[in-house]
Image 1 (tube, rainbow, N blue to C red):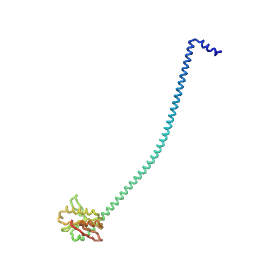
Image 2: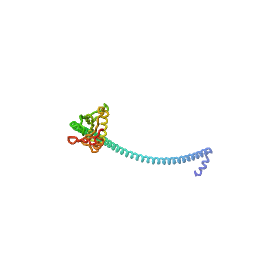
Image 3: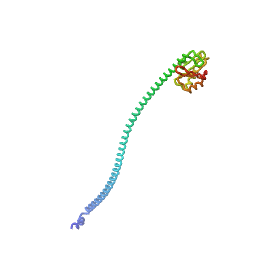
Image 4: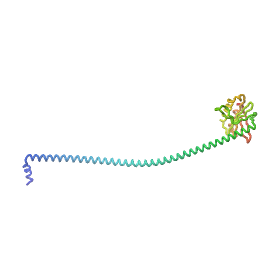
Amino acid sequence: MQKEDTPNTFAQFPPAMQQAFISLMQAQARSDERLDRFDERLDRLAAQTNAALDRTNAAIDRLTERVNETTAAVERLSREGERLSREGERISRDIEKGHKEMMKLHQDIDKVHKAQGRAENNRGAEVEEFFYNTLMHEPVIGHMQFDKVLSNHMIGKKGKETELDLVLINGNSLAVVEVKSKFHPSDLDQLQKHIDFLRDHSPEFKNYQFYGGIAGFSIPKDVTHAAHEQGYFVLKRRGKVISINTNGMTAQ
């Protein structure tokens, strides 16, 4: 009975109240519509937010994976760096050790060279002393008899001096002897330079005949041959005496 009376009941309200009720219902409808649209926007926003979060999480996961990979690579590089550092230290120690050994080797070589030099000097002095003493006892070269024998004779002016091993002198001839413990072909050039130097710096021997010779305990055949070709005489030791070879000897 009441449901059937509802329209009549609404109609019983004054028109203004009815209009207000209708406006209220319309406002409620609009509000519901706006709420529905808001809910839809919220749903879309939530979906977009969730999608963005999913993408962000995926990016974070990828970044985390890359960070982990980078960290692992850095750790490997760090370990490799430590290994290389240790290897570098070992190599540095080896280099330092090798340098010290090389320095010691150079020192040993230098000692050997000095010892050889002293031995050669001693040998050279022995050779010079032998020929000097022998020629002093019998100052004869071929057909020439000499009156004076000089050893380690210095000639020239100060600053331009040259030492001659042996010089033999008589009234008209002069012989320059190059003495060596070991002879090389180039030593013949040195002999000729000594002869020329003596001639140029000794005007008192201007009219003398100059001769050249080599003397040694052992002289190679090629040096002996070259000496004869250049007109030099050759003195060799034969026990306690001198073997004198004047073949081809000429004044220089």
